[in-house]
Length: 376
Image 1 (tube, rainbow, N blue to C red):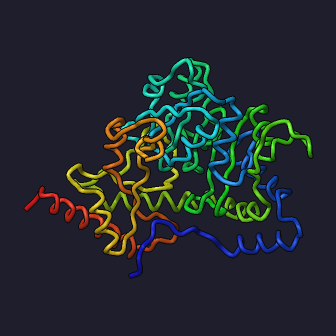
Image 2 (image 1 turned 180 degrees about the vertical axis):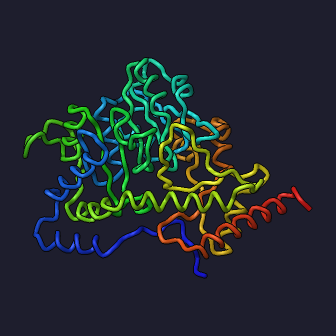
Image 3 (image 1 turned 120 degrees about the horizontal axis):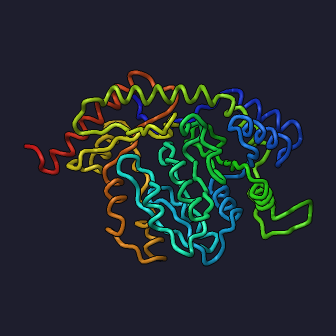
């Protein structure tokens, strides 16, 4: 059996034909296809504004600027996230203030966020790690109490539900990514969603070189535009989103069945407020005695990819350099990171692949424990 990767984007002939048709139309920059894609998102997410961008880092940057983050401000950011969450704050010449996560959900909780609020705090950023929504109501209560906007990094949770509602309309502004491994993709791309007209106007202005109208530049803006070629691809991907969600739920269920009653692993914990997980990633929590990195190496030797995402941002070399962080400053986040591993998760996985992944993962965990001297 061939090597099993972490992800294979599900792309059909429809995407190829849509891109070809757009090329033949003669219009390949931002235009009607982008507008069509935005309209579809607005209807699906029941939100007033959806604004497409070139990628999911640009969306975060524009979102922060649109809620007024500026030089000298602080933004509360979860420590367990991809580095772009914090980098977007730094782009604004503001300071990310990191908060640790709950060991069960891997997400930041309201109480931990509130404890980090200072007079310099300008905004709260949430992250739906691995595709599971945070407890939005609890965090919104804290934000309201302190008069702070929330920027939701929902890059991984498109298609997920908080309670009965799709993620995308819970806070001031949500940021989504359409990178290659996301549930719907266009290679690179992203979008923000908001019900606030002023925030929406600012995001549209910032993505288009700060223009309020053609050649009238009212802000220092950016070229964060999505092209119609990319939007044509994205539209075809979007049409499958509910089917994709069904497939991802089935993948998670198959893994849960395969690893149930296995004492070395904890399958994902799902709080009551999560109406639907996006299953962007399927993550196992490992017994503390397992050498996770050794386990991953053994899996790779046996033809199975894995992923350890993400290292706490404060432990990254650039953040140690900029802010003086050191190992041990975020012990809960560091312990969570050392104990989890993501498994292959893509549409089209066969039963034979599931069986191999489950078998190899269990064997690798045992071997990693033997080598640490726990057994034998």
